[in-house]
Structures are given as C-alpha cells and as structure tokens.
Length: 372
Image 1 (cartoon, rainbow, N blue to C red):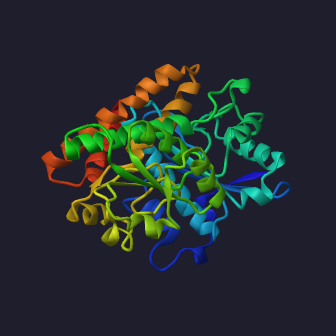
Image 2: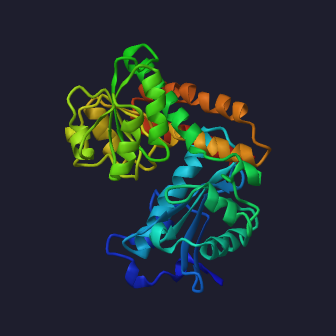
C-alpha cells in the first residue's frame, strides 16, 4: 500500500480544456492543499482523498462510494466536493477546513471490510489532517469498520462511540433553509400550503418529507430507486410521486424544488423549465457550472446555497469529536435559518446572487482563519 500524489495522473488524462491538473493548480475552483490517490490491490481499493483547506482546522468531510465513469471523473468530483466542504464548514461556524474522499466502484459489488480497513489506513496516514465521515454510498456501519484502522473517523454508531446517522440533522437543516426562503420570499417562515418537490428520498430526502408534512406542506417526490418512493408512500399515502426529475421540475404549481440526490441538478437544461420559485435541497454541488446562479436569478428563482442549508450533517459529525450531544447539535443546525437569511440580505445589498454572497462570507471567514 502506498500513497500517490495527484501529479502522478498521466498527462494523457488531462483533456484539451484543462482537466484535473488545470482544476487543481490554475482554475478558480482549485487551490487545494493536497490530493492523494490511494490504491490497495489486495482489497481492490481505489480512492481519492482531497484536502482543500485546513485554514480553520483539520479538513472534515465524508467518503463517497460511487461507480465513476473514469478515474479522472472521480478526482474532479473529489476536488469539487472538498472545496464545497471548506465553504460549508466555514459558514456552519465550525473549526474545520474542507476535505472529501471518494472510493471508486459500485459499493453493492466491491464493498468489503478489507477494502474499508485499507481505506482507513490511508486516512490515518494523513495524521489527522483529514477527518472522514459518511456520504453517498457509505453508512454508519461502514464508518465503524473504517474506525478500526483510523481514529479520525466520525459518523460511527452510538455503540462504537459515535453519533449515528447524520442524515437526520442534514434534513433538519435543509428544512430550516426552506423556512428562511419562505420568510424572505413570502414573508412567513412556514411551508403550510406550499407545494414542495423532492428529487431523491433516500438517506436525507425521506426525513425531509417528514418535516414538510408536519409543517403542512404538499409534497411530491421522485427517486431513481422505486423502493425508496414506495417506502415513503407506504407511510404517507398523501405524498404524490412522479416518474422522474424531468417531470418533477415541470410540475405545475411547484413552490420549492429540493434536489436531494447527486450534484449538477441545476444546469442549462433544467433551469429554463423549472416551475419552482425556490430551490433548496440537500444535494452537494447543485450548480452544474459557474453562471447557473445568475440564470436562476434572471428567472426570479431564489436559490438557497446547497452547502449552507445541508450543513446539519457536518455539524453533527464535528460535534462527535467532542462528545456528541444531540440537543446541542440541533440548536446549532437551527441557526441555518439565520445564516440563510443573512445570505439573502447580503445578496440583495451587494446586488449579487445568493450563491456569490455565500461564497464571499465563507471566504472572509477562511481568510481570517489563515491570518490567525
């Protein structure tokens, strides 16, 4: 088992438009401190660990387990996700920088204890510069295994000294972001009578459904996994379902669209046909490329920046490092309401989209951390 730096990516893998190395060293999306490629042939592990910033403290972010189309796609995802974690942790008021890891492959086919233990050894080799947790494709039980070879692991089960499922507070935080959006746009922080469409009702989305129904919202859902939709509708028959995301974003009378699956949901194809007046969801990296935030603003669609409203989970796993207290974490996650309102106010005063306002506030805190 050895550690390979990102500079070992073959030149052929760098496309004409820049590719991985351009993103890392020369683009505005770069600026990462360290990127590590990990391989353990015995277990089949191939992983990427990206540390964007440690200005505010050890980098903190989850481990995504996904069947990427290529190794370059995996590296680029790690770069984007880790950068997002720096901004998320900064605006969540955490003393952590941003990092993220991706494990390449279908978790349903290749995930084993041996692979996760090997991954834990790679994380441990960074000596605490990176603290890992769950993400898409990884679960509490997986973090329990990773923790056997790496003490810098959060998102573990209560039986193993952890806080358990972080998706509970992630959903709670997104709900607070929706309440703030309603306050800003309609003058009342309630979703009662509003129609909310959720794309993805897996780990986070099905908890979000609960909050919305309790608040009196009308909920429409979709998911690529039919069993996820069936689980929600079996418990809540009043929840409507549509065939796919394309149908959801075109739903008549939709007030809020909540992307809660993978990133890139807001793009050149979806934004022009989106019927919702607000976008507020749990997915990371919802903006497919720079400029989409302006397209949303030009259409009069209020965008609650994803890394602001989905910070409840990282608030929970960060607290686990200091002795987890759920009530303390929920109180911190409730402040996402105030942070989201502050971002909308800054956007209005500066004449910029909310995504740009959030970036400015996060960059300000990171810069203060570096000076400190």
